[in-house]
Length: 451
Ligand SMILES: [Ca+2]
Image (cartoon, rainbow, N blue to C red):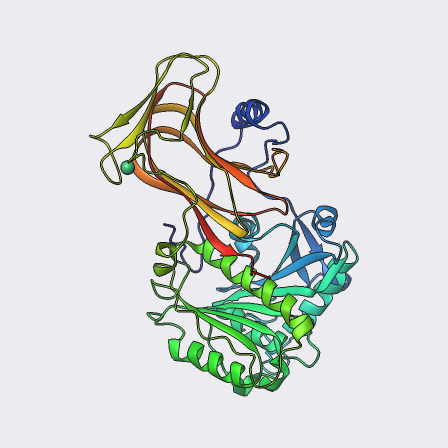
């Protein structure tokens, strides 16, 4: 579980760079020819829209790669951070790009302008302006979309915003402009004040994913409910999702973000053909919370808790120095765990579970409970394969594990590429030490809608 403070988000790193790259490359070659090591920070560049130094933004992702994923062009997520909306959110937004976004996305993080020292509204708009303001956030967003469009073909049906707290009011305003380019808005922990917004009717056919904690003491939860009801009445496609923990990012942050983004993508796509009829566009509020949702998820990893012994788990003892044994003393779940003890050097040893049939998920949350004693170098990895057995994802790492640790859960969410039919979970021992594994899960976060 991750709790991110609201104003200074912590930077979550899966691993440290450096000597990791060489080891990773070797593992990649061993296990999946197409996999390659990746830098821990996603690529981003500083840009200025409309050649205006005040319209500063960070662009995450490779324009050519993103645009190449779909004939219609790349999807674009525009992020309006909360707090002071400053450049300091860049590492956190980098994590959003890496952890929460499906393939084919570019992400533009806008940097708020402080026009005067006294300015309180972080993201001023056409109707909620501040002294000295030379442009509104709506204009800023439009210029960034135009700027990114010079780098890559952007699918006009797949332009979204993600905002939280102080970013929320401007995101509502941008989406409610007449002929707004924004097709969907993920708005988290925000106030909702219709008196400073364009007419809500402008939101007809547009998607809003409203994410709010019932324990939020800073932005009243009643406003989220009001936004849901009034936007729905106005003909918008709205989903309201609650999470635990009050104001701020809590729990499985990136997973929750991804669920919202995927909903926006799907809703925007279906809205293109269905054109959102006036009286019946509404979807009931999702009864999910960050806590409740995982319990209901389908788990594709059979015997992930080793309760049936090794079962279909494969053990690959390349070094002849590893022992794979069930442990009834140390366990996280049920009666036993798997203990992988390696006492010497040699080739990598692997504990592997195949997921022979993926079905049609859009994204998967892969997790395990692990415990370590003097682990010098171990990895938790996830691969997806096409019908020919070819590995389809480049960034297969979930976590590198070293040293001593009590039971902890490690997890990562993966977007499922087109053509993926099977998968495999792997624990790789690249050095000595003892690693315990229990309660391995490959859970369906979102599924493609049945035709
Ligand atoms: Ca178990």
